[in-house]
Amino acid sequence: MSIPEVINQLKTIYDPEIPVNIYDLGLIYNIRVIGSEAYIVMTLTTAACPAAAFMPEAVRAAVTQVPGIEAVHVDVTFEPRWTNARMSAEARAQLGFS
Figure 1 (cartoon, one colour):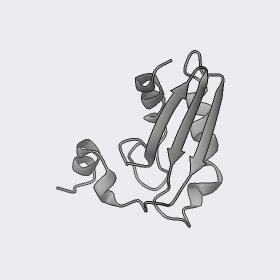
Figure 2: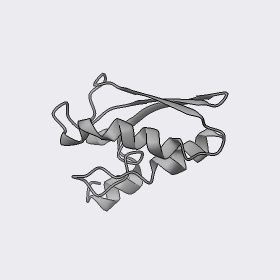
Figure 3: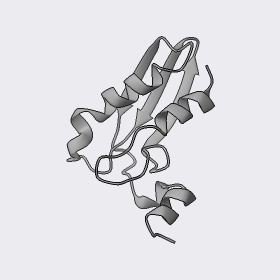
């Protein structure tokens, strides 16, 4: 149960409007694993994002699949606001940003 395993699970979740996983999109601000619990701070592309209703639960469900993780705590924040500068180089290339 390590942070790389958590990241691998987060990369299985895709933004419903942008064909990029939420980790490479830069929506994950912080990941901590303490014992058998994972703590994730994330954001959404906008406060009015239609995924707000289900994205935290999708994160919780995915990270719960990591062996040894028994509880997942997801906090959604809008500070700092998300911008496309948070995307990974791969995501920027995939979406045509340079």
